[in-house]
Image 1 (cartoon, rainbow, N blue to C red):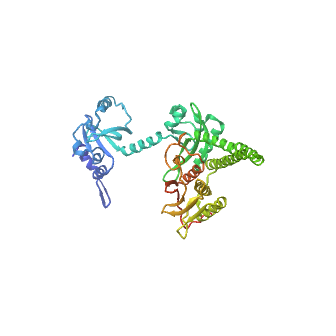
Image 2 (image 1 turned 45 degrees about the vertical axis):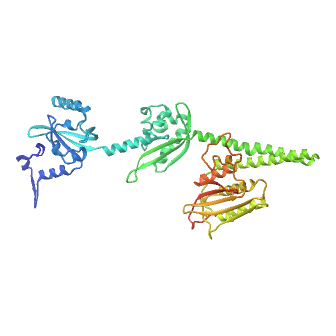
Image 3 (image 1 turned 90 degrees about the vertical axis):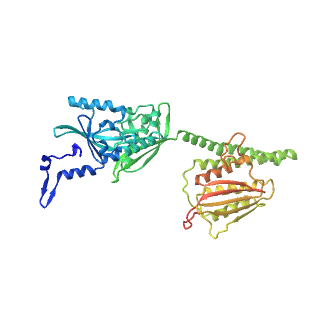
Length: 492
């Protein structure tokens, strides 16, 4: 038995007896030390290990018998041994601690050679006239792993992220936010978030930060766009603050986050300007040109010149139609969020085909729906635009022949599929670029129409897909959409 475990007559005198229940204090503490999950280690003034409990083996790999009688340096990484020895010697001479013994994080050397992070609480006591030092070892491996994982996520994201006290005081911030502002952590930590560098762009920004904290500490999620200040530029961010609760659902911290959407907002502004130009300026000017061309066509007696005027009218009408499609494209990109719900596909196809048969009476359009009940896709009112654009595209690209278009509805467990099959020449390779494949759009390889782009953009927003298969003759465009539950009510 180790010296730290020996009993004396004095110890035996401390054994207590309760009425009817004997109580051996020494045995009680032996079991307590043996069964604790934290390691206990006792050394003497010569740094020799005189006691170790079984939990040490779980932490450092050594059984108590392998440690007792050996130097504590067995458990100290070589690079730290001199400092450890010097610190103990200084304390024994002067009673002056060189470290805080109430809890210090140190690496300990495992039996297999790797280092284990431990938290050590050290106490001096005397036994049989000897000065002994007992340390309580807590394994920090799992805690350190979680901390490193959190730090890796926290500091390796493109988002601005931080931690706040409930009163809005910033207590942590990631490197992305610090780098954007070119400030040191010490310059902003400890300040209310609305007083930090980022929110000094305007009073509106500071007020937004205040409202965000107030909202989040009341238990609500806050989200709003705000312009913040950086070292070299300002930025519009998608700013949010959310509460973090404990196991009792009490709010403990707030997490502010910001995603830089400056480029996105700039593109949105450009698209809005383009939308206005296409909607008003271009369309109005084309209508003027078309009106003059129609007047010329009717008044010119020369057949050749009349044909020129007719070409101008036809080309103008195509440009007007293109501008209208571009308008729809802009509305799809810039419009309000669309609430997606189950859609009655059978009724929608009937509506689209009825309109197209009137517009193109020479064409044959049929719908094949083999099931008694059509599958229900999840979409919105824009699905009508998708189907109209794709079926019309199949009709008009037939080199002047009477077109035949067949629409086949099918489904899988997860999706609804609509095949649009035509007998025309097929979609040229250049028109498929960036829509039906991942090929980059270039000045040479790109489509001339906007209808397919519009359809692809909407279907992508649904979480679906648009594919194309060449056939002989013609081709097949397949629209794949997420499937809803059959019993759900579908919008017409």
